[in-house]
Length: 120
Image (cartoon, rainbow, N blue to C red; front, side, top):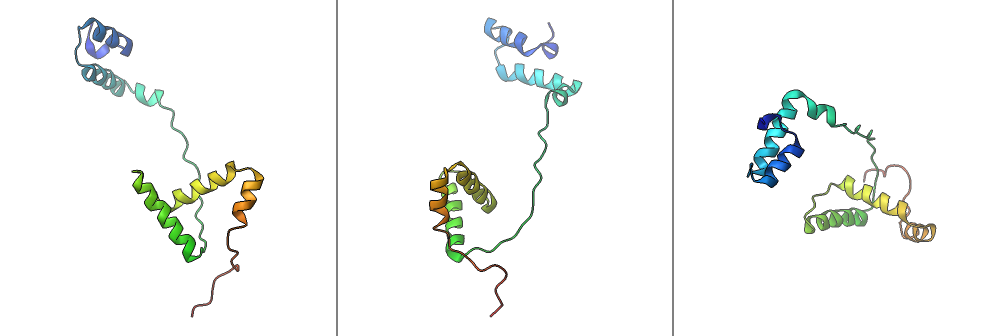
C-alpha cells in the first residue's frame, strides 16, 4: 500500500500495527493527498462571514475606563480582546438575563443627553 494514497483509517491501522511509527508523517501524507486532489476544499464548508455594521456612540469617561479595565482583565486570563468584543460580550450577557436582572442593570446606567456636546 502506498502511504500517499492511504486513508486516515488505514494509517491508524498501520500505526496500531507498528508499521508506521510517526503519526505526524501519516497525517501529513494524508493531508498532502487531500490538498493535491482538492478534497480539502470540498470537505470544508466555509461559514459565511456575518455582516458588520459600523456605528459610533458616546460613553461617559467612567464607562470608558470600565471598558478598558475589562479589556485588561482579558489579558489577565490570556485573552486579547478588542473594545468591540468586550461590548458584544456584554450584549450577549444582557440577552441571557431574565427581565428582573436586565432592568436592575439598566437602572444603574447613567442617562445621557442625545446628540453631540458643543465644543468648549
